[in-house]
Image (cartoon, rainbow, N blue to C red; front, side):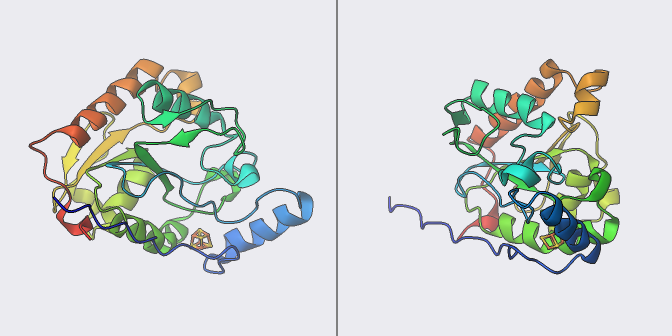
Length: 230
Ligand code: SF4
């Protein structure tokens, strides 16, 4: 059997992407305040030929916006990366630092919005504008079988990237949605500080969803996404 074609890199936003004026203004203010920080769209991380995409919301100002690696330095990264390591989707040690040497092996992490929004709240217009880059990521992952959406915004962004109305698939923690083309959308509450500290999302709950997503990604009778084939 011939080796699969290498995946093409997805269209990614420029370091100074000008498309969301409010986020650009916030970026410039953060650059002035913390010039040594990343303060730019945070690139996706992980192999593009992974069968699993973890789809988050947006960088945290003092986490991924500071370090330049998704979820790195964010409170949410603690549960997320500990879980990815536990389930064999990553190797190494997570030390909240892009130089920690940790490697993702079985999942690619993507955010619905690449720039940090004030108060962690992107507007619907910003989510819609950045959706072009999410759509490009879907197109650049030839073996993608499951997207694990962390929260409602990520869930809806995944649907939008596929041209599917949000009303057709309602977000619910633990739900699995079959999308056209053989892709599966799995829902989890976001691994945010609020959700984990209030008990809305426990470690066991997140592990249960992650295990189901991994099982679906490995399932022989679940066809690879037609739309993502090279
Ligand atoms: S959120 Fe996305 S579209 Fe908006 S400025 Fe940042 S990279 Fe560009």
